[in-house]
Amino acid sequence: MSEVSPVKVTVRPNGPLRVEGPIVLTDADGKEWDLTGKPAVSLCRCGASEKRPFCDGSHNRVGFQCAASPAGNLT
Ligand code: FES
Image 1: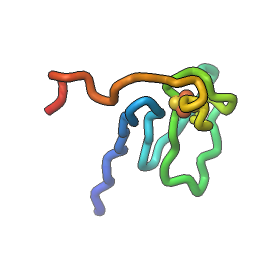
Image 2 (image 1 turned 90 degrees about the vertical axis):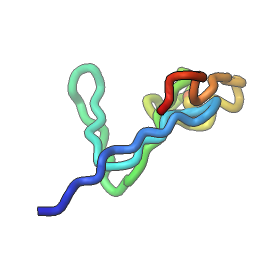
Image 3 (image 1 turned 45 degrees about the vertical axis):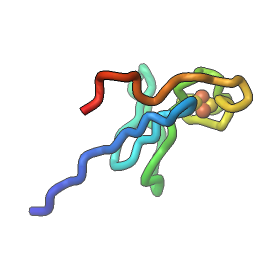
Protein backbone atom coordinates (compact mmCIF):
# COMPACT_ATOMS: atom_id res chain seq x y z
CA MET A 1 0.00 0.00 0.00
CA SER A 2 1.46 3.36 -0.99
CA GLU A 3 1.39 6.38 1.26
CA VAL A 4 -0.66 9.35 0.02
CA SER A 5 1.07 12.72 0.10
CA PRO A 6 -0.73 15.37 2.14
CA VAL A 7 -2.34 18.28 0.38
CA LYS A 8 -0.08 21.32 0.55
CA VAL A 9 -1.53 24.81 0.93
CA THR A 10 0.79 27.75 0.52
CA VAL A 11 -0.26 31.25 1.54
CA ARG A 12 1.14 33.58 -1.09
CA PRO A 13 2.11 37.04 0.14
CA ASN A 14 -0.45 39.56 -1.17
CA GLY A 15 -1.98 36.81 -3.28
CA PRO A 16 -3.91 33.54 -3.39
CA LEU A 17 -3.83 30.27 -1.53
CA ARG A 18 -1.93 27.78 -3.67
CA VAL A 19 -3.34 24.28 -3.14
CA GLU A 20 -1.28 21.34 -4.39
CA GLY A 21 -2.50 17.78 -4.29
CA PRO A 22 -5.73 15.87 -4.80
CA ILE A 23 -8.70 17.83 -3.49
CA VAL A 24 -12.45 18.03 -4.00
CA LEU A 25 -13.61 21.63 -4.35
CA THR A 26 -17.32 22.34 -3.94
CA ASP A 27 -19.60 25.32 -3.64
CA ALA A 28 -21.99 25.78 -0.71
CA ASP A 29 -24.53 23.51 -2.44
CA GLY A 30 -22.01 20.71 -2.82
CA LYS A 31 -21.52 21.14 -6.57
CA GLU A 32 -17.99 20.22 -7.58
CA TRP A 33 -15.60 22.05 -9.83
CA ASP A 34 -13.95 19.75 -12.35
CA LEU A 35 -10.26 19.80 -11.45
CA THR A 36 -9.36 16.94 -13.76
CA GLY A 37 -5.75 17.27 -14.87
CA LYS A 38 -5.00 20.09 -12.45
CA PRO A 39 -2.36 19.07 -9.93
CA ALA A 40 -2.65 22.47 -8.24
CA VAL A 41 -5.06 25.40 -8.06
CA SER A 42 -4.82 28.94 -6.72
CA LEU A 43 -7.79 30.08 -4.66
CA CYS A 44 -8.63 33.77 -4.46
CA ARG A 45 -8.02 35.35 -1.08
CA CYS A 46 -8.70 38.96 -2.02
CA GLY A 47 -12.30 38.69 -3.24
CA ALA A 48 -11.64 40.59 -6.49
CA SER A 49 -11.32 37.66 -8.90
CA GLU A 50 -13.85 37.36 -11.72
CA LYS A 51 -13.22 33.60 -11.65
CA ARG A 52 -13.83 32.91 -7.96
CA PRO A 53 -13.05 30.75 -6.21
CA PHE A 54 -9.97 30.75 -8.42
CA CYS A 55 -7.38 33.52 -8.53
CA ASP A 56 -7.24 35.41 -11.84
CA GLY A 57 -4.46 37.80 -10.90
CA SER A 58 -6.81 40.63 -9.90
CA HIS A 59 -5.09 40.86 -6.50
CA ASN A 60 -2.34 42.78 -8.29
CA ARG A 61 -4.82 45.20 -9.91
CA VAL A 62 -6.59 45.98 -6.64
CA GLY A 63 -3.39 46.21 -4.61
CA PHE A 64 -4.35 43.43 -2.19
CA GLN A 65 -2.03 43.50 0.80
CA CYS A 66 -1.81 40.66 3.27
CA ALA A 67 1.34 39.15 4.65
CA ALA A 68 1.62 35.41 4.15
CA SER A 69 2.69 34.67 7.67
CA PRO A 70 1.78 36.82 10.62
CA ALA A 71 4.69 36.83 13.01
CA GLY A 72 4.72 34.42 15.87
CA ASN A 73 2.35 31.63 14.84
CA LEU A 74 4.48 29.42 12.60
CA THR A 75 6.55 26.43 13.57
S1 FES B 1 -6.05 36.43 -4.72
FE1 FES B 1 -5.66 36.59 -6.81
S2 FES B 1 -7.46 37.47 -7.62
FE2 FES B 1 -7.85 37.31 -5.50
